[in-house]
Image (cartoon, helix red, strand yellow):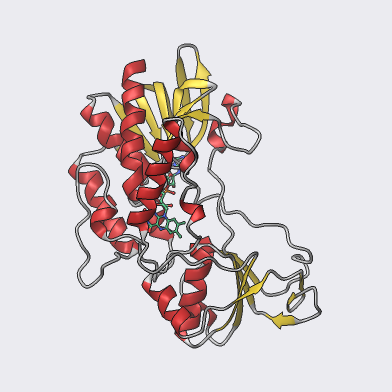
Length: 352
Ligand code: FAD
């Protein structure tokens, strides 16, 4: 039987919950369908030592400050899961966990949402499925010949999984630097860190707070028709969180340029040098999880769905939340998603 509601939110991570908070305030009827069995979105799958790059009070969703974590300026991923679990309960958000949406289709004046455990008909959809379940691995010459373990950020847990092994970590962003630091500081793993261009560390005093201000300033400038202030990327790529700083200070975080190819037992550079490797961890980013929206036929040339703010240009009843700056400044961060969620829900309410 098809269930009827005003709005279906697809995804119950931080973005879906922020949408839920504002939908409640607008007194709309809605449901949040989330593939995870438990609350916390992708935070429940991140590596053991991961800490936020902003203090708790600067990592909060609308309505409720994230409490500080005892003994930590930058809370760990487990603390974020606890916060999101509490948030879901506190606002009594109607999250249906363990429900994966397969397709969203047009259906007369509404949208039909087909999930593995039922079908909904809604007047609007907010898609907030993040990118964790779509890791990106670039094609590298020889990758089929490598006989060791090939992993992505999503598969990495802790250094103990690589004790006494040689590990190549690929990627000059935050995940690459943090995983390389995590492995190197452990002392039991021989780490080679490779990056496409020399790593660009942000100054030590810049954390997520400053990045949020920069992203917001840039959006305001662009919206007001002023010159592009050059967003976060103009400052650098890597936030110098404490373990990264410690590993760098100890001389453990020196990057090599990108290798030219993989061989059976390691990687080789164009100058003929090579490193043996038991495992390669690709910290090469993610792509937005949008397969459930394929029936709407909205994809633009870069694989993204073109939007005005969060509203899909080709389907005004669909909003996209949290995937990256293309859906709002700092929309893929804890602190940033609240504002875009508020704006998206206002538009949805206006439409309904
Ligand atoms: P997710 O947390 O991925 O939630 C999406 C939810 O949708 C998941 O529960 C998923 O199971 C579900 N879903 C997916 N597809 C479907 C479907 N078809 N049907 C139903 N449900 C579905 N941000 C910060 O603010 N501070 C940080 O310090 C920070 N550090 C980060 C470190 C790493 C390594 C990464 C990867 C990101 C970090 N971020 C940080 C960015 C961002 O806050 C997180 O990526 C965050 O998890 C994004 O939230 P989300 O709700 O958009 O997506």
